[in-house]
Image 1 (cartoon, rainbow over the protein chains, first blue to last red):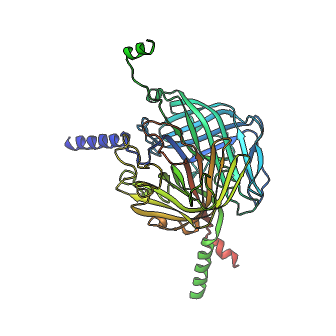
Image 2: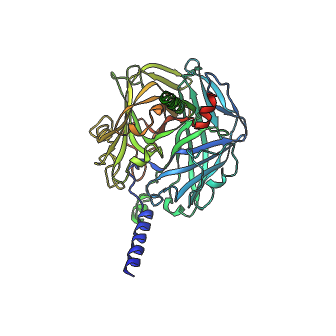
Length: 256
Length: 240
């Protein structure tokens, strides 16, 4: 009997340890949510550029629908109760409804390099808590040619903890020159706003914030598994507008 | 017979060493802030001779090469990117692009003192300080155990002022550090990318630190070199 109680107690302790919000050393600044290695983008109508030096990038055609799937790796306050714990619990997300506002523009970069810019129309994002984890990862690897049996399906199951809108998404990909030793760069920047989900109360009053990071479009590399067009690595920033306390007296004073 | 066995063993070893298709994966992922240091007083961002640096935190690790050997509960994991001096400057169409002299480096540290994190965090904010270099940065981001060091070559940075976003990238070759032994030697030569955006004003609970130029988010990617596996039968067949 004592042994059973001991085992039960141990199990309970382990369970508590598993769900206790961890102090995340990496948090700070405006960082709210971080995603990195396991995030990939694909489009419905994109064309590979000329492979100069053996490498290229996907260019969107007008109206091409963008989908991004990924796994969160870090949550910071006030969402730090969510602790990714693969393979037990994953926090997966999907961006959808975005489409290229026009075809990707291609410009000369430095001397004989290229710079590709793409603007996207507004869309939405959805973040799920799911256990056991079932979404593919970069190292599993990502199954080819999405949409397929697990992408985006396994990124949009579980409990919808947060959702919102994405607007003004702009991506840039650069290639320094036209040789095999070219250096690649990239970035993305967008605005987002929470609109719902079971944890919307935790981020009430957050308004419009920045969604930004690195956008790796180098083909062929691990950034662009077969059928994927880019690998975003970024974060959702967070800045609550400060509410200034006041009194009726002070308000009356304004009108005297 | 002995010579034959030795020859066969040599063949097996050689076969195992032949790299198959190479792919690349994220070794380390990070976020932080960057800053410039003027070589001489000027009002130009990253003018010729200016230096580019960045500090911040590692947010995740390669799941098999590094994750088994880190303890984010006990330590903070920071990085310090430095030694990058501008040697060419272009500005056209409101887009800045610069390249850097080879000789830059990036270092990753494991530090149980957590002095950069500045715990408890929250409510305290990370110790970026203001107007770097300062008493906090880089010193609280380059202390502890040097986990991995890497050289940065062919480095470049662009910033598109039309869209207020940019990127830094370079070749990144591992040169040492206590955790370098966990990364297979054929995977040491990789590349490094970070996206740059302007820090938003305000912020809660921690506002953007003053005097930094951009917040950054990125990764270093390294090739995963697979090896071909054969069978004794297949090897014997080659010599029949």
